[in-house]
Length: 113
Ligand SMILES: [Zn+2]
Image 1 (cartoon, protein in one colour):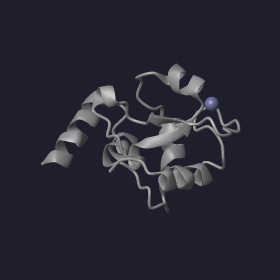
Image 2 (tube, protein in one colour):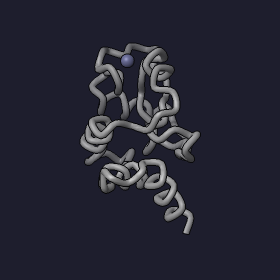
Image 3 (spheres, helix red, strand yellow):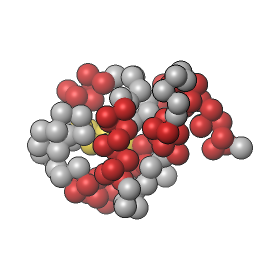
Image 4 (cartoon, rainbow, N blue to C red):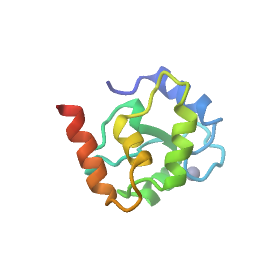
């Protein structure tokens, strides 16, 4: 399900009007960033998207989220209809000794089962 303008508004409220990555006020020029990058198979839907500055979005590029970012995302979404894309939760719950990209790939495969 793609992003709607209403989803974007709900996201802005959840994030307190701030960029997900740097925490500074975001204003009207927000961009959408995929928490699990599309390069890893990340879904293009609200449950995998945050609002960021364009610059912060570019700085993140195609890396997977840090543990702190996962924790922040899950906390923000816990009671939101926007939801948490299941592979994000799988990454958060994963054994830290496991390769992150494998955890993500397995969680995405589970979704398609
Ligand atoms: Zn920022």
